[in-house]
Structure formats: C-alpha cells, structure tokens
Length: 162
Image 1 (cartoon, rainbow, N blue to C red):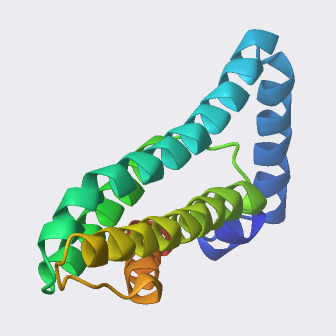
Image 2: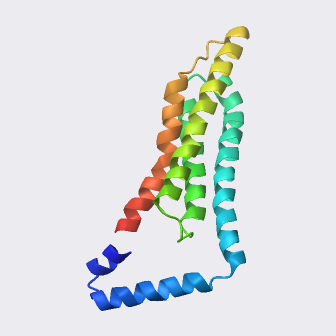
Image 3: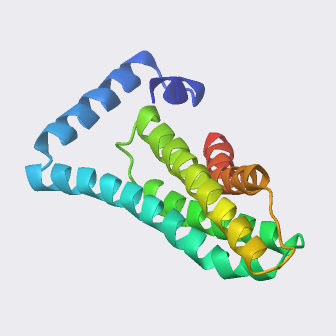
C-alpha cells in the first residue's frame, strides 16, 4: 500500500497518517467480523476444492462420450468459470495477503490436476472395457484445467495493477 500511495504522489506525512488510520480501524474491528473474514476465506477454499470435484464428476460422461477437442474445451470452460467465481469472492477480501492468494490460486488447481488425472485414467479404463476408442491424455486435461483456472486470477492481478 505504501508503495502505491507514493506512486500516486502522496507525501511521507500523508502515507504515515493513512497507515495510522488503517491500523486504528483494524483494531476497532469487531472480533466477529475478523472471524467472519477468516471463515469466508476458508469457505472460498472449500468451495474451490468441492467445485473441482464436482467438475470432474460432470466431465466423466462428457469425456467418456467425446474423444475430440470438445472435452478439453469444456474442461477449460468449467475451470475458467470456477476460477472466476472464486476471484469474485476473493477480490473483496482486502485483508488477504499474498500468501492467501497463492494458496487459493495454486492449491485448488493442484488438487484438481491430481483429481482429474485419476478421473481421466478411470475414464480411459472404462472406455477400454466398454469397447470405446475415447482415450484422453490426463496430463493435457490437467494442464488445461490449471491454465484456465489461473486465467481469471491473472486477469484480476493485471487489472488491479492498472
């Protein structure tokens, strides 16, 4: 914050006063509000993890039936939408620090990659046992998910810096 205020032309005195006001406001915050903010962060993290599990379940019939690029496109669309939903929640939590953003933006996609890797391998086994020739690359689907999930966060950071 200090750096941004200097870039906007604030003097040292104004920056110190702003920091003092913010610290004072933080101290006056009701304890329930602080707990609510923390709960909202963890709730968002849980929504992201459950969302990735639901997306993998939704993708099972899509990937089982479809062997074309549509499976990858739908994986990317679902990941982008979940990433955008999480960013909509997280962007209003001003108290979040860099490590909070990193946890949400990396933990959820990493869990999703492992989950999708297992699901896609099971889909490939099921497809083989049913005599279908719909085989998918689990690594490529995981990478598609990761990139599309991170994309809203990267857009948010880019717009925030401007």
